Length: 280
Image 1 (cartoon, helix red, strand yellow):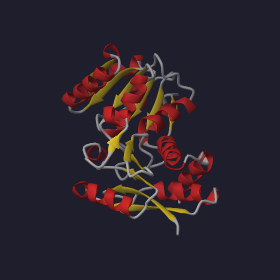
Image 2 (cartoon, helix red, strand yellow):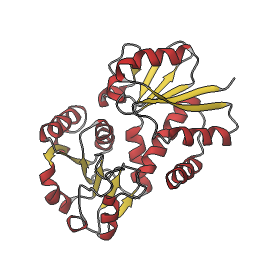
Image 3 (cartoon, one colour):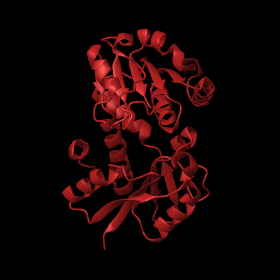
Image 4 (tube, one colour):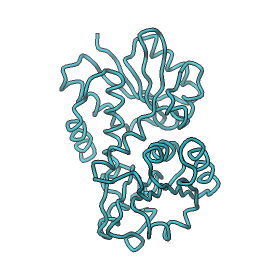
């Protein structure tokens, strides 16, 4: 009998995780299968306990379940996930314990390292204040970046900055409104977009234009559908370095794979699989 893994979310039909993980399992000759399951927040605890009861190998959680999961009595979040306040990976232990992790920040960090970004000391502007922004900001702040979080609702940006400051380095984290983006980009080393601007079907929207960017900037858009967002096209026009959201998707998935199996995943194959799925 195949060992089952899965991703819970709502909506979930768009997920590329099944293609990515099933390709990895197949290549490694593992008798495993990965499926997507639609689960609403109010049913999450029952779904997780049901998966455990049925002997699932592990789970991923996506929107809108990550913040809900950290509040559930059945899951023990690891220290990083507890600080972030969100869980995207669930591991079922052999002694009945269920542990929650957050691999989003690690995925974003590896994507930036691939682009030869020196995170420590870099001035990084993060657009958005949701779950992904929270995970990325915590990780990059821990690695020594100077971070400004911007959001349409400035109070949310300030609140997130305060939460991260309490856990990391207060003088290097601040919140601001979207109206301050233009001036912030003049001195920024990295721009990370965690908002839905530019995501299919609203592909002609962007948080910044070429005129607002500069050639020494690295622009990382975690949106991966479309493959090249308007923000990344604008960044290229400005001569800036670009980082695709596909890399974060793959690297956070690869870290989850390691947590579940203890086996090194075929990362390059996972990248290739996701690229091909988006181009199909």
